[in-house]
Image (cartoon, rainbow, N blue to C red):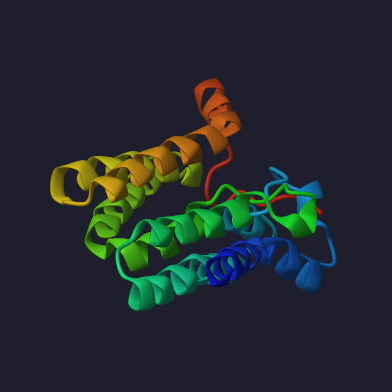
Length: 198
């Protein structure tokens, strides 16, 4: 019973629609009706600028970090830890507060891996920065970062559960970016600095 309560709590924490709340509070608009329509930090940045992006990203990251870090602290590296991690990410991507339509799980996933494997997260972050610096597309950086994270897990980690979990999560993140991939191929994906009209 205690475990079920913790999993529900992790899902609900992940479900907090940060981008929706911040944009609504500051601009008075529904983020789902502007830009890409995605309820995440990148779209919030298109509406609010860099500091809006940063605020949403940090809060979404903490949604992933705190439940996983505390679970790891009290329960150790167990299967339950990865179920908690999954619940936080599913909460973010399928939030109960917005009819199960949320973000793409990147910022929350960063928080999860900050708790699970910070060194491999660093490698993924470097790949992300390189891609964004060269192509100025956050979506491309996120996709490449997810692939690098999965690859480094298989190369450097011992836990088979962590390896499999990361690979499945990377596939999920890439799937959530399927529309971005289409726009990248068509040359219509928005780049950093492009704002939306409200």
